[in-house]
Length: 272
Image (cartoon, rainbow, N blue to C red):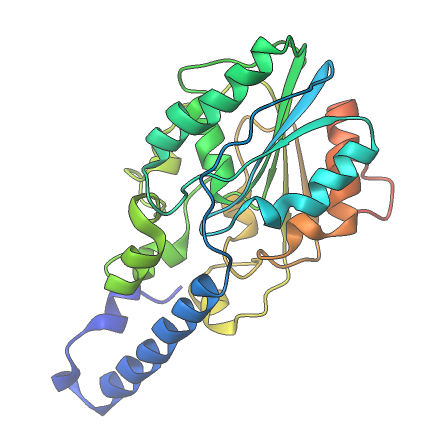
């Protein structure tokens, strides 16, 4: 993998560096387009009016909203689950604050409604928020977690871009702690208890990002980085990071794991 620091050396070092600098300017513009084209963050938390014995909390990814999880919300509801799908300020607050204020509030609402099992299904950053929450809390027995494309070992993109103003502006404090170094947040969180399944993709539509990411990736997170030591099962599907939570195969596999504690490796819904 190329050293990201070499991408930011002074222009005076030669024509080649000027070319790299120009390329990075274009990359920053693409970053702005990618993140700013997503809907505005919604921090409004809708109250839990009705819940069944099994509730699924959905946590969207960075710079996304609950709308990105609506296909999954609908599929879970069709399969008999009560679903909590609310937005949270992913680009405005720290991972710790999101976990202790927003996710904790969702879980507490479910407890007050006497939910017997509280499952959590996450996309991207939502997986790190959940791991942070479980450092100090526990879910009811029998609860399960499915993480979709989580940067469990950090993100090489955070390594490369975290010093850029536009990256910090677009991604906020949470984006600054998602590197791959040993001191990064994903790599300092302690193992968590519970049945955890991880789904990630290996299809990328961004060659620049994939150039920075070692091995197969989904355009944002490498397959290797998605893995978690304490996970019960792991699945790779052909999908990109931005749309994997809408993938029909993924929707089916999420339900299968919540019901069985494992993925359906025998079906055509995914592969190892």
